[in-house]
Amino acid sequence: AQSVTQPDIHITVSEGASLELRCNYSYGATPYLFWYVQSPGQGLQLLLKYFSGDTLVQGIKGFEAEFKRSQSSFNLRKPSVHWSDAAEYFCAVGVSGGGADGLTFGKGTHLIIQP
Amino acid sequence: DAMVIQNPRYQVTQFGKPVTLSCSQTLNHNVMYWYQQKSSQAPKLLFHYYDKDFNNEADTPDNFQSRRPNTSFCFLDIRSPGLGDAAMYLCATSRGGAYEQYFGPGTRLTVT
Image (cartoon, chains in turn yellow, orange):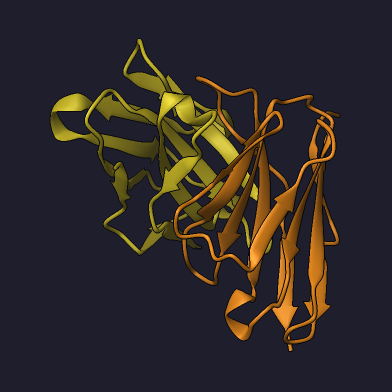
């Protein structure tokens, strides 16, 4: 069965600084990978996805992520964070693109933005 | 805008009193999912429908059931809620296959 590890429970970043959130996955074949963001009391919004092809994927809100097969990683990055980026971030892995079998989520990383 | 809608956003029920949560979608997606998310935890898949085919996760309690009367609607029934069932319940949809899931805003369930 697949699994996702997000090693950082909390990360604090100054506004305007760069950000990297870590995600490692375990899956026997090529995974389908996603990053979602969740604001308090809200549902999950898709930031970006990787299915195949270019290993550097661009998403919404200025986020990008890089798939590294050799490291089983799919880290999320943003060059300059804004206060509105404060939220919970979830990395997820899917089988069959996550379409039919549901997603397996990491435990999330809580991002705090300090002025 | 096409979207996933959940009603109500907040639901309070009494211990043991059946409750139904509703999800509707205007995306015309084949697959609809229900996830349970407890405080400060990751969403956990309960079950999903691929069209009319129901797929239950192995560790989903029998207390939880679902109905999908048509493509647009899906319901989550909790027959006898316990205090441990208090959580955010998220509905999601997908076209199926290699496509991402779209989530609704969730229903926050409180059990008193």
